Length: 220
Image 1 (spheres, rainbow, N blue to C red):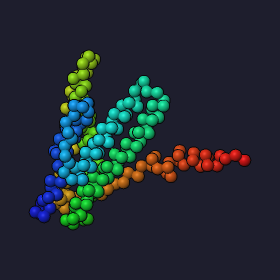
Image 2 (image 1 turned 180 degrees about the vertical axis):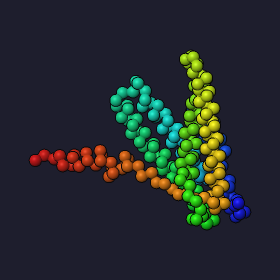
Image 3 (image 1 turned 90 degrees about the vertical axis):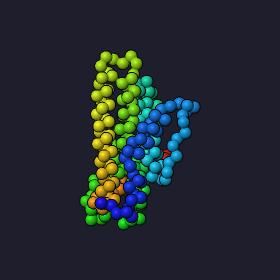
Image 4 (image 1 turned 45 degrees about the vertical axis):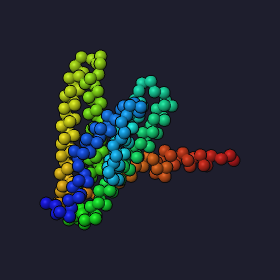
C-alpha cells in the first residue's frame, strides 16, 4: 500500500478522468468552431500534455481519412503524407512527455522503486491507446446513426461499439492498476524512446542519399 506521503500522486493520473476528458474533447473538436464551448482549463502540465496527445491523434485520424479519399490527387496525397509524418512525430513526442512528467513527479518521493518489477508498457503508451479508442468509439457511434446506411450496418457497428467500450474499460483499469502499483513501489516503468528515423534527414537514406546526389551533381 502507498504511504500518506505518496497520496498526492494518486490524483495525478486517473484513467476515469482521462477517458472523460478524451470524450469531451472529441465531441468538442467535431463541432463547428463558431458553436464550440470553451475548452476545459487544464490543471498542470500533465493534463495539458494528455490533451495535446489527444489533439495529435485527432488531427492524425482526419488527415489519414483525407489521404485515403479516392478523389485525392497525387499532389494532395504527397502533402497529406508529409502532414501525417509530422503529426505522428508530435504524437510520439507527447507520449514521451507524459511519461517524463510522471517520472519527474515520482522522483520527488523516491519512486519508481528500482527493485520493482518492470512493466513493459509505459503510461504514455497506454494514454495513446485510450486516445485512439476514444476516436474509434466516437466515429463508430456516428456509423450507428448514419442515415441511408446499408442494411445491417447499424447492427454491425453496435457490436463493434460494445467491443470497443469493453476494450477501453479493460485498458483504463490496467492503467489505474499500474499507477497504483507504481506508487506502492511494486512496479516500475521507463520511457521508451521511439527514435523515429524517417523524420531525421541524417538517418533516412531516402533523404540523405538524395541530398548527397544533389550536392555532387554540379557541372564539370
